[in-house]
Length: 73
Image (cartoon, rainbow, N blue to C red):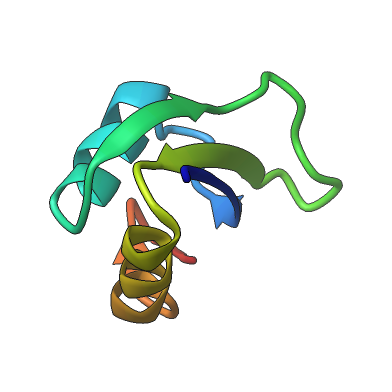
């Protein structure tokens, strides 16, 4: 069963391909999406669909609090 994750506090410079690349290092990514909308503080948010719930938990644990493009996710 795949699982879609919400990722907040993304840099406005990050593209969906970059988000895919970062998360794909830690598990099987099926899809990634960053809407054009921005949060009030100018940051963005996105979604990553992981191949399984286990991979989603692993990637969450590995990337939580890490810096990507000058933003702590």
